[in-house]
Image (cartoon, rainbow, N blue to C red):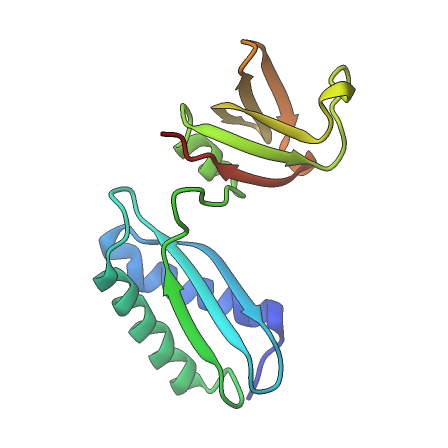
Length: 160
């Protein structure tokens, strides 16, 4: 019995969270991509001290076993499990709180009032997130408050 894309993503997220709970592993993002014989189930996982190859293997086995047992996906697909990388995506309020103090790059849905000249791109140091508002200290030393729903994309920014 195959399920809809959003239901599959939700189910896989639950499987990852359950399987990784003991080791502090979280599901950062789950993607269901492609079509026909070229379908990919891509899972990004993370934990506070970094993801190991063994973590990826364990989550892969857990997800694979449940998907096979519950017959949630019809036909062939490729399962990929990896870390989100050093420029990981930030999407949940907890992400913005956890990585406070880190360099960040935001793409906004529209320029902020008073910052139209800057456009939709904002880089700075993440200060945190409180009640759905993300705070970023810009390189010019100003603190900008951005409602979470106005952020189209957010990533940690790797610096040397």
